[in-house]
Figure 1 (tube, rainbow, N blue to C red):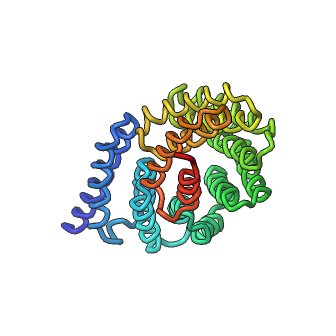
Figure 2 (figure 1 turned 45 degrees about the vertical axis):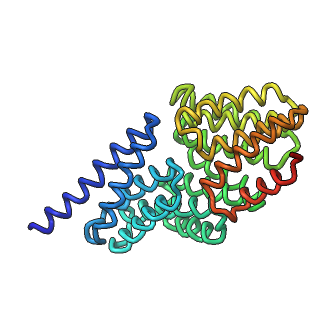
Figure 3 (figure 1 turned 60 degrees about the horizontal axis):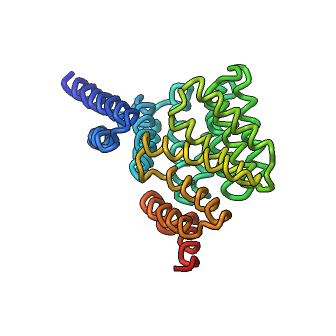
Length: 318
């Protein structure tokens, strides 16, 4: 009886700290959010598998909080704990769904650190756990696989995954938030392919419309859609419109996520490219250096993005 009470108490501590951490992150209080996330993670480390059994979803939420704070090592650890907690559960929807969520989060972290083979293994395993009637979870896995394929140059495969995700979400209507995720990703794919595909702009604007209705104009998801809109407008040579969208996105990211967030670096790189196109070499160099500083903070030193940006900065005059 005493041991069962102690287990419940440990889980309550994790849940309470997580709720407070999520609240702080939503308010933009990142240092405080990290403090609560650390307390929740420490409680999870001290707990055993028996304590955490049946609570994989709670650990996935904690991993998502760390992910939002761009603390990828901690996000990976909490997702790993969720996978371990699931191993003591019997197979079935109650286990397989949270286990798939944990594997998707681990796969996303591995992808961000350019460990693509490991990321794909996690995501393929997650895909095998998801039943088709669980359409939202099936869409989540397909979107994650699509992003991985895009980053590894498999554009046609990425598009297939994105469109399958959209098909999974059809019954939820046009305003489902995950439909905006799929449209955002299709816009990003159009940018990656180059050539100024007008479909990219259409997808980005549709995502913005959905998210602004659901979340308001100053949410970081809206900022992400504005950023991809800026990138596709730049591909079309519409530099002033692109800069406006990117500046709006960067302002929201700085306000909501902090000045050193990875997404700020993405905006800085795109704005630097626009500066170069318009002959503002000094301003472009400043932006590239700032982006490199942020990416070195959030990604592994050998990450392809860090290496490419480092080479670009070294090659610039002055």
